[in-house]
Amino acid sequence: MNGVRDTQDGADIQHGADGQDRAATGSAHDDAPDPASGDADWLADPALDGVELRHLRGFLAVAEERSFTHAAARLRTGQPALTRAVRALEAALGVRLLDRTTRRVALTDAGRRLYTDLAPLLPRLAAALRSPAGPGELRLGFTSLLPAACRTLVTEFRAATGAKVRLVRRDTPLAGLETGESDIVALRGEVPRDAGLRTALLLQEPRVAAVPRAGAPGGLAHRRVLDWAELADLPLVVNTVTGTTRPELWPADRRPQLACTADNFDEWLEAVAAGHGVGVAPESVAERHPHPQIRYVRLKNAPPVPVRLALPARDAHPLAERFFTLGGQHRR
Image (cartoon, rainbow, N blue to C red; front, side):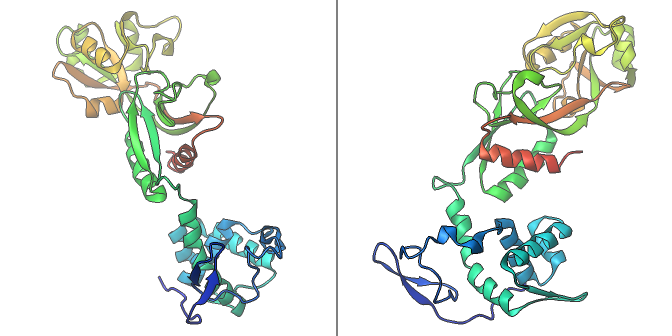
């Protein structure tokens, strides 16, 4: 990065409210109001009206990169949004901060003065806004299997926030969100409308049939592909707590018979392996849970399994909000 560092050398000495002398970095203006003096309420200064943090971040990035394209990439935002942010700052201050041409971006005199004062302040602001107790921890709940898409989200979330992520598996319909054990959850299947949650669709997973290798009717264990409609003639093993496949997914006049039920994923898997019936699961189960007594068979014409992030509609954890927003950017 091409940092702008052609500023005045030296430092002023400021006297804090505790009587301690401190060196002030940068070249703060001599006539700037002292928040401790009591002569004026700096919080009411009209210079702050209309200025947002994203405006300041955008300006600093462009000032250092000398390029809207490179600055947008650094901030992970679109160039049009960055351009609007800088223009909004110029409008709020009533000055031109940047000279733009088709080939270069340069700071005006006003832009250089603003950069000199802002550059040391924003890192201090970022440090002040971080939790005094540390970077914090987000509890990410899931049932049975954490969706693969969440692994990428967790990596990006850690990089963006510095927060820790604790994975919480709970074999309950809402993966611990209803008991307060999770802050945000990854759920497969439909979410009850009366659950009081906000949701964002991450992806749709294909379904596969889980067929017992021994005792499967009609040579199912040797089939490469099954049609969804064929399963209506077979006994079905269902995980009634966290499963995503119920007889109600088939037409009312042609549904599979319920062979047995399970209360969690492990019981469901063993019931299929024991030959109690055929199971249906997201494709990720076949990839991550091979079983010597089960063969996974591709399904055609099967409805996909929706995978969603969910968090409380009200009073959600701030870190959960950040993760939720990031998840929305990864929808596919």
